[in-house]
Length: 481
Ligand code: PFF
Image 1 (cartoon, rainbow, N blue to C red):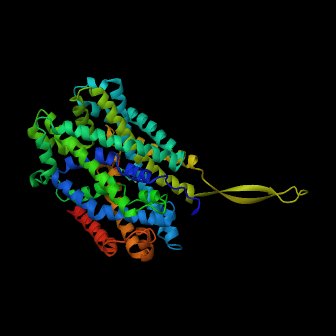
Image 2: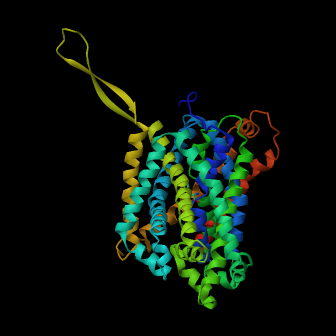
Image 3: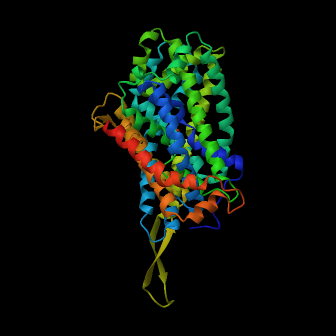
C-alpha cells in the first residue's frame, strides 16, 4: 500500500492539533455533560476518568503504534501487519462504526449550526424559555436536516482536499481558541451565586444521586471514555498512518488524552454550576438533570451566555467554536471511511482495445481503478445524510423509528459508543499485545531505538491482560447489572 508516497502531517503541532481535534468535539461538550447528568454526577465522572486512564489511553497508544507501523487505512493496516490473516475484517467493523457514528453526530453538529445562526440573528438573545426552544428544534426535522446537510457539505469539502491542507489548518486554529473561551465561560459559571452546588454535584460522589443509574454507570462511563478519545475504531490508527517517523507516540497519546479529558471536565465546570445557579428550582435540579437528555447543553449554555455582558458576541463566538470543534471530529470520522474506500476498493471497468489494425473485433481487457477521493467522499456523504434524516425524524413525534426500545438516534449512539468502540478496544489491545511482533512494538515506541524505552513490560502487560480483561468485565457487569 503506497508505503513510500504516503502523505504525512506537516508539523508536530499539526499532529497534536489533528488528533486532539478529532478527540475534542461534541463528545466532550455535549455528550459528557448529558451522560454525567443522566447518571447522577460525580461517581460517573470518576469511573469515566478511571476508564480513560486504564483502558482509553493505552489503546490510543496501541492505535498509534499499529497505524504508523501498518501505514494504511484501518483494514489495510491489519493486512500489512498480518499478511494472509483475516484480521482486516476487523478493519471493516471499524469502518461501519465510523459510518454509524456520523449518522447521529451530524445531526447534533447541525444543532450547533442552528444555534450559531440564532446567535447571529439575535433570536437566541430574545428567547426566554430555552427548554422550549430546544424542544421546538427537536421536533423540526426539516430544520435539523437542513443544517445537517450544510455541515456534511463543509466536512466533505475539507476531506476531499486531502490530509495536510484541510485537516491541519482547521484544527490548529480552533483548539487554542476553544480552550480560551471555555475557560472564560467556566470563570463566569463558577462565580454565579449558587454555583457551588453544581461543583459539588460534579466532583463530590453522592451514592444517592447515582442510585437510579446503578450498574449502567459502568457501560456509560466506558463508552463515554472511548467515544471522547475517538478510540477503538481505527480513527486514530488512520491518522497515525500519516505520522512521520520522528513523532513520539507515547508523548503524543498522553498530550492528546490530557487535552481531551481537560476539555470534558471544563465543559462540566461550565455547565453544572450554571445549571444549578440559573434554575428557579434548585431543589429538584438533580432529578431534572437525569431526564434532561441531549438538550442539556443547548439549554444551560445559552442561559449562561445571556448572563454575560455583550451576550450576543459571546454567543456567536462560543457556537462558532463549537461548530469548528465538531467539524474537526467529523473530518476525522469521514477520513477513516474515505481512506478505506480510496485505498481498498477497486472498480474494474472494461477497457476496449483493438488488437490488430485490420481486426474489426475489439478485445475487452479489464482494468482496475481506484476510487478518487472526491467521488468516495460524495458517496459516503450521501449515505451519512440518509442515516441523519432517519435520526432527525426519530427524535420528534415520529415514534415508528424505534429499535429495542430506543429511538433511532439513541440506538446508533448506544451500539457505537457503548458496544462497538469498547469491543474494538479489546480487539486492538489483544492484537497489539499478543499478535504484533514485540520488536515492532518496541521499535515504534522508541522510534527505532532513538528514544529511551520506559515501562515497556508494564505497557505490554496492560495490552495483554489489564485492558482486554478489564474492558470485558466492565462491559458485561454494566450490561447485566
Ligand atoms: N471524539 C469525538 C468527540 O468527542 O466528539 C467523536 C469521535 C470522533 C468519535 C472520531 C469517534 C471518532 F472516530
